[in-house]
Image (cartoon, rainbow, N blue to C red):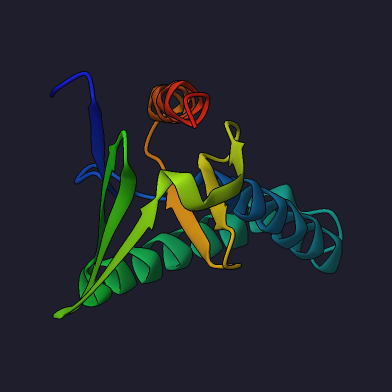
Amino acid sequence: MKSNTLSWTFPKKEFLVLRVEIVLIAFLALVVYLFAYLQSQGSWWLGTLFTALFLALYFLTSYGIQRWRQVEEHYKLTKKHLEVVRKKRGSMKKEKAPLKEISHHKLDKTFLGGYLLTRKGKKHLLFFNTKDEVEKFESFLKKHLERK
């Protein structure tokens, strides 16, 4: 990889769930556990059983949807523009945003996402696999936006 380009693919092959999805699943699992526990009048094993069943169904459904939709995004950032290629089950959409047109950007290092806004009002969503990718993107973007 050259020092004047940055590229990554989302999601990686070993990808299972988004971080924000993990937070939601944990909250829902707690709700399922508490509801089953209270409905069974204090039986902790029924709460645990229904929570495990909920999680198993969720992850099986999630895996099936990921395999069926086949979503993949390729990002390439150069010192002049950002290219995004979105592939979804046979269709492909390309977006290109010149860096000189970017008016605002926001990145979330906790949930590994973000967006860029252009002066024309177009929003470009960004997804990352690791915190390291977010930090590299941010430093690369800041370095090349300062020159403008």
